[in-house]
Image (cartoon, rainbow, N blue to C red; front, side, top):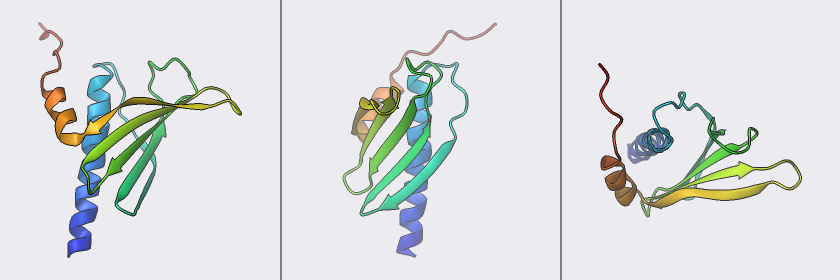
Length: 111
């Protein structure tokens, strides 16, 4: 039973993390689809194709969740092989990230 709870919590955290990335990128972002999800040792990793607004069209994103400490880090892999680099997009305690997300400016209401 405890294992099922951890799996459900991890999946929920990944969904929320993906939604945060969508919100931080603006309202013109397409739906984010995870390419690979790996879990072990108290961590969860989600990879996905890069953001449409990224500087590099071949960019890939990586979300790393610390399931025990409540931290989330978002990285982007950019550049051409073999000179790819990993750049930190945002991260920190999930509580702070969610609190900050609540106060992001909202686009004006439509007609």
